[in-house]
Length: 423
Ligand code: CTP
Image (tube, rainbow, N blue to C red; front, side, top):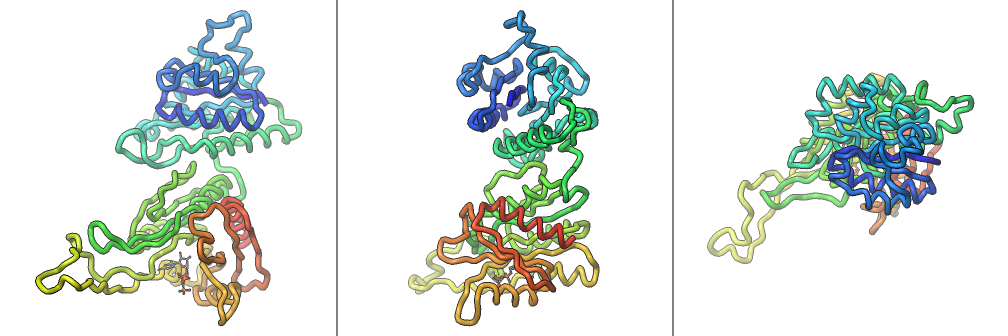
């Protein structure tokens, strides 16, 4: 496929290098069109070397080839990543003051914009109105991720990771080219900003990661959950059109595209965030590893090796208290209401008392949730790995859906398939 990769002038331009690599490694012909401002961040030689093609930077080079018209006309996909507030404004106004905006005006193929900017600029009514204008014209706008921005600030505005942008582009290309009778053009194509997919219109809450229960300012009780499975669940739900809130406990993973991340540390913070978000949710998926216990007391200053005279050889005793069972609390709060659908996770090992599935079924009955995703665990299995094997149990149903060994992304897809049939 012939792809035009537009790059506008934001710090996230460096991430477009990875996106370019993914396109070229998949065999696409990519012409990079950086704006003048983008060249301040990443220079033309980098784009030329990575794409293996000359870089088109302005309308005055190779004029005999009429690049400002030809590039857009010939493309199978135009993607702009990052798309700055300025680029979005110029595109919405239909301006053609440089090669990239001219290309956007002449393109009759799908057009994808991946905005990246500071939260204030993204939230501004002008930018939001421009995004609505563009999506109404059929442009696919990939919502920015939330997270750390250039400075110390955080919020919506991050360019999603290259793999996510690539996956969206591939999906749009595949959709466009299998859509029989589809005229080449942006009009009529589904816009990513207007949710489409089997979970469109659904609000979902996913928890991920592992809680940390502080002992003192430098120590905590924690667990080995990486958050990968929960993040994959949030990412797949967003791609299927859901409005996703990801309550993330201490994960260092990047925020998935289009997902609102609520960071938490402790079980009590997680409980509060989930309870608030669950009030309006259609589905709650509890993938986080929530600590069952926390230290009874938090020591405001660091616990010292020695506590006083004569105590040199003593280690302190830490007294624990029970944390609330968040999943059980959600089930109790729902009562007889049909919503939300509640999904629990269980890490199980088989033993003398029963198999992994026996323990899973007993836990499903005990917890009262609708679906239970049973992970088979053991030494070095599951935690932090990219692959997983699960059994999905449904309340009141005999059959078990087995998924894996597969990527956590594919496991997430299987879980959402099960949730969709339960909805
Ligand atoms: N969970 C929760 N609140 C807790 C502990 C766990 O909501 N305080 C949720 C987890 O997010 C997960 C499920 O409950 O969805 C796991 O159940 P849990 O009873 O914690 O399983 P185990 O720790 O394996 O429990 P047990 O010791 O009963 O086997």
